[in-house]
Structure formats: structure tokens, C-alpha cells
Image (cartoon, rainbow, N blue to C red; front, side):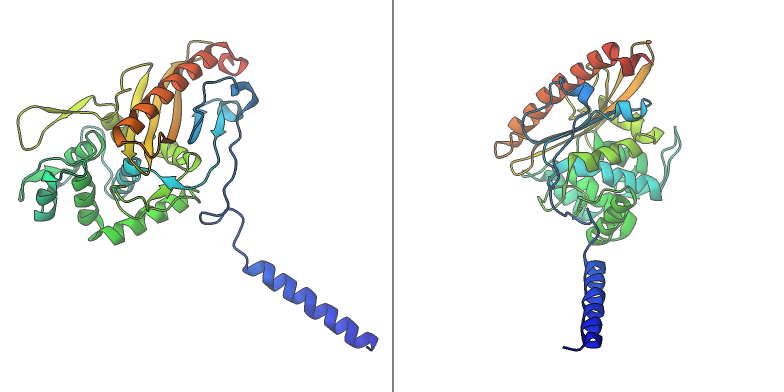
Length: 315
């Protein structure tokens, strides 16, 4: 073969290689291959759960506060932890200030009919009832009403599908590249994420004063009957816990996004955020959630002790 032809062939191969590389998805795009977690060397002695996925950070300490992630970051069902993103999207589109109730929203026939479901968590409401945005956010986050999640989605975006698109856009904007939302409630196992991605959301949403105030409430009033409805987060009020959201199902296991305040070595309170996913998956939702509570509680107590004794906590 002539030298000119050899040179031309080489150029073609180079161009083909460049074009082929440009067509490949960027590293980490979409769900992508799973990645192993990495734990800060000073936090390796913490009581990390042995199963599932866990991510923890302490705000205000820079790199020292990024305690790390335990468990392979393969997207898994997150159940009702999904509702944190639902609330985030609602509050971004319809922001509230402290003390504000926001607009009244009419309970539609679908939300009322779903009140009596025996297969999912729901909140009793009546068709035609007018409840404020703030009240609906309480019913979404405190007793974890799936019917309320879908009502808010319809009110905001017109349909579940349109609202899910908004959730996914918000996730991408936060860098949650291994997360896929398919509904506002998280009932279907097709809504998946990782502990590291959900920690990004926790960090962002806890900056909203209204959200923080709601998830810290031990209970709220029932909209259609006397009495109060308790917060599903059994850790609330223990070891400095001030939120955030539970989630459990047989395929998802027990899941908990949590926030706690803890004093560092100088006595200054720090905000600690964590996400525990896929605890006791394959058991009952109740067993999974109890496992998530137990493992999260041990980890929170460990982080509180770490803050008191580590060099990072005294600076």
C-alpha cells in the first residue's frame, strides 16, 4: 500500500475514534455503573450499618465533615423518602415564608377516594375540603400520606407524569445523577436513588425554614377527624434528631433520611445529615423501618461522640 493511502487510513481511524468517544455518555451520567462508597479515615470506627447504603456529613467542617459513604452506590428503591423531593419541588414553585400558610388547595375526588386505601399510607380527607399548602405539606411529610403527595403533584403540574419530570429536573440540577423519580409518593419501586444522592437533597432542602419546621413537628392535627397524627419518624426528639423522613416497603427495605444537631468539641452545635437506605430489604416494611431506626440511632450517637473527641470537631 502506498504511503499516502496509509496516512489517509490512519487519519480516518483517528477521526472515528474521536467521534466514537464523543458519543459515549459522560462518566457518571444516568444510573451508570455502581461505585463503591468511601469513608473518611477519621470516621471508620463509627458504627456504620453493615447492609445497604449510608452517607453522612457534618455541616460547617469542610472536607473534615464529609464523613463519607458506606455501601455500593447502586440505585435502589427509596419508598417514601421520595416525598422529600416532592416537598422540595413544591416549595421551589410555591415558596412559603415562616408563619405563612400559602394558598388553599381543594381536595379532589381522587385524593378523597385514596384516603381509605388499605395497601398504602394515606391521610383521611374529604372531597371539596380546602386545605392550605402548609397543611398539605405537613400531611405529606409527617404521616407520609401518599394521597396527599399525588394531590400536590396534580395541583402543581396537572398530572403525576408532569410532576415526575419536574422532580427529575430538580434532581439533575442538584447533581443527583443516580436518581430516577417516577411518582410523587415513592410507592412504586421504580423510583430509585442512592444514599449519596439523597444526601445532596437533604443538604439543600434543610436550608428551607418552612421545610425544617415541618419535619421537626412530632405531630399534626388530623384534617377530617378529632385528634392528632404522629410523625412517622420514631427518632425525632432523641439524640438531637430534628427530622427528616422515613420510607419503607418490602422491595425497598427500611430507609431514613435524618438530621440532627450535635455539639462539637468547643460546644458549638453542628448540623449532622445522614441517609440510610435498604435496611432489612425483603422483610416486612415494619421490620425494615425498625432496622433503619436502630442503625441510624447507633450511627447518630457515634457521630455525636466523634464530634466531641476528634480534632475536626474542636476547630
